[in-house]
Length: 195
Length: 124
View 1 (cartoon, rainbow over the protein chains, first blue to last red):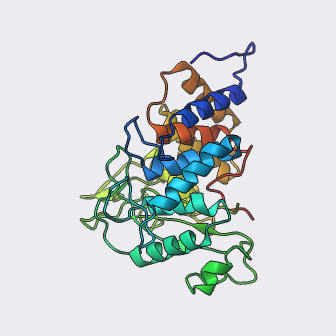
View 2: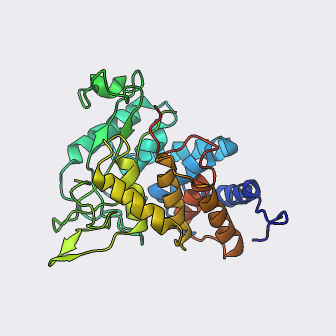
View 3: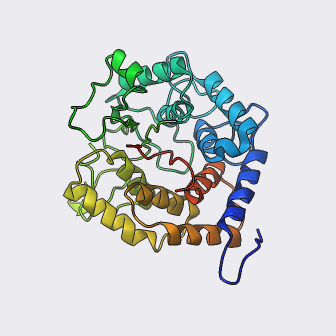
């Protein structure tokens, strides 16, 4: 990749545009993205791609979100890959992606339910099909955002923080997963950001 | 759990921090993911040590994926990332194309850090 440069300057905006173009072109007909050019979509790659493209590639982003919504399991979790039979740590990441839209309350609610249900359970290793340290399980979810966190609080999932907390107007969520052998793994954890 | 699993000298790895009495080394990506998870927590010595470790490690990160996660993490803690972003952009522009789409997307997120809503920062 050769880029236009000033005397001592790399045009990061150009780099970003090029990367965004590459990312858009890698989108699969399903609306998802795969890791390495295969035809099997990955929820991790899709979630990160949707977040990275943001509003710069609205069409790709919309179809990516549609893919995520369609691939959510009835129990609220997301599989690591198309065809996997169970939810995985990628639920936390997909949740962040969907949550950033500020829409799709039902999908978010089901995902939260899955995350809460899975908290503390031993993982099955699902989602370890990549080279990254992905034996992570759910550790905690926190939602503190006034207004937007209402749904979660109404569901009784997350109590509102004390009034003195400086975080009353924000919310976050993290997801971790435990190794089956009981040794804890600190790995994938993601945060929810207001749209 | 995150605080409990921190490595002895700061940061996190993908498993236990000590095995058979031997402290294990932290990993960049794991530390970079763990730190934003703790952004709502009181700034404890464990968090401070992790941040110190990542700050020091960031200067010698070679892999785009780890560097991108490092940038995203340090930004959450209001650490300067402009130089790291330049390094990342240079690596991407000079190296072969990023094959892994997840890495590509994370790199793009890191390069846009500060220009768009940070996907892993809790807005206050």
